[in-house]
Structure formats: C-alpha cells, structure tokens
Length: 221
Ligand SMILES: Nc1nc2c(ncn2[C@@H]2O[C@H](COP(=O)(O)OP(=O)(O)OP(=O)(O)O)[C@@H](O)[C@H]2O)c(=O)[nH]1
Ligand SMILES: [Mg+2]
Image (cartoon, protein in one colour):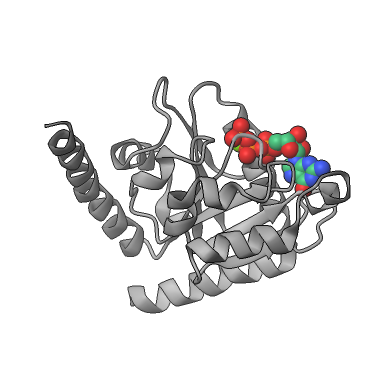
C-alpha cells in the first residue's frame, strides 16, 4: 500500500515536470538542477558563475531551502534574478514548487536557469522537476566515500563538481578515490574538480555548462 502511494506521488510529480520542461523548451532555456549536502558550495558556485558569465549569458536562479531567503538574497545582490522557495518541512523541491516559482521569472529573458535544491544527498535525487541536467557537488571536507554511501544521487546526475580543492591539503580527501567511487556508480559522470575560493577549475565547469546550452538549443529547434 505504501509503495502504491509513493508511486502515485512520483507519477503526479513527473506529469508536472514534463509540463515544466515544455515551458523551458518553449523559452529556449537550459535548466540545471544543483544538488549536494548543505554547505558544499552550491550558492557560492552560482555567485562565481554570475561574475564569470556577466555580459555573456543571462542566468537566473530558483533557490530551495527549508527556511530563510538568504541564498536568493546573495544572488540578487550580485544582479541575478532569483526566486526563493521556502519548503518548510520538505527536504526536496518538487515539480509543483518549480511550476509556481516560474511565474516570478521572465523565462524569455534568461539563457540558463539554475535550481539550487534543498541541501541533502537523498530526497532531491528522487524528484524530477523538468530540468535538462542534474548536477551534484561534493566538497573535499565531506569524505571521498560519499558517492558509495549515497549512490542514487550520483546515479541520476550527469556531472559532479568536486568543490573546495583549496582545502584538500588539510583533509584526508583523495580526489582519485572520490572520482573512482563516483564513476563506479555512474561511468558517464563528467567530473569537475574546482575551488570557488581560488577559481581553479572554474573554466572547465563553465565550458561544460555552455556546451550543454548549445546542445539543448539544437534539440529545442
Ligand atoms: N575554502 C573554501 N570554502 C568554500 C568554497 N566554496 C564555498 N565555500 C564556503 O563554504 C560555505 C558554504 O557555502 P555555500 O555556498 O553557502 O553552500 P551551499 O551548498 O549553498 O549550502 P546550503 O544552501 O546550506 O545547502 C561558505 O562559507 C562558503 O564561503 C571553496 O571552494 N573553498
Ligand atoms: Mg546554498
């Protein structure tokens, strides 16, 4: 019985996600769902991208948090149109929440919409929101075994950003081990080691995003 209820919830969510995707495609928009543990650096990465892409790509953000509008405020402060969803008790964003937030954004005025999901490596992986790509962040302070402990997250994503490379010398995090662990779950995962603090590795990540935009636009034609 419980299983049926869960299946119904996911099916209803998928139908709204498909409608969200139609809206994104009609607006010629690339949508990337960013997911990670709390504090891995999702909002910081968005701030860095906003600075790096200013004048080249128009980015917008939907922020999902249990409470506060602090992350949306951080992006608004650097000139990015940002909408905050406060989920209350929910540990993930769902397609309905995204659909409602879209009315606060001018989709035709954007090239890439990033959705920052609620910080955790579990439930956000289960819910489609209509995005084109799912991306996870793993930071060097979290442990290189995390892909093995939270396999669903790494399985559903197209890319993994390994953030906080600048802190690696002070931890026991092994980048090769983390990469091998993630690829053992998902061999197609693109891996981007970087540091939001020093800027090392940001270029490769940004070119992955711009390539996905080109590819998505071709499919949308
Ligand atoms: N040393 C270092 N600190 C970083 C880096 N990236 C982010 N931080 C710091 O990590 C902390 C958390 O970063 P956030 O960007 O708020 O993390 P988040 O994933 O958005 O967190 P939630 O929204 O709570 O899930 C902040 O103090 C950042 O300044 C990095 O590359 N190196
Ligand atoms: Mg954040």
